[in-house]
Length: 102
Picture 1 (cartoon, rainbow, N blue to C red):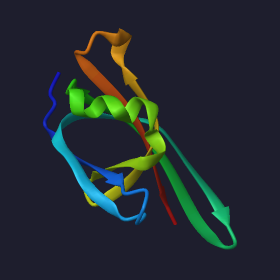
Picture 2: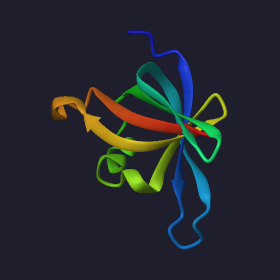
Picture 3: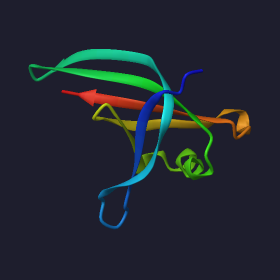
């Protein structure tokens, strides 16, 4: 597995609602799905990617709080839909991120 794509993870400060740097690391990235639809004359694309990262204890909190974290990859923002510590083995964490562009 080639975890050669740099990703950044940001965490929302719940008091100020500002995004702050949380983690940077390398991931293997695979596109899971994609859709396009028209909304009020604009074409909206919605893409879902799997981000496969080596386990790091710092990432563990994301599993239970996906709504306050987001992924930045190639200057695109991905909302985290799901996080999985694969079989609770603490070897890798798979984050499912969704990017919506309009």
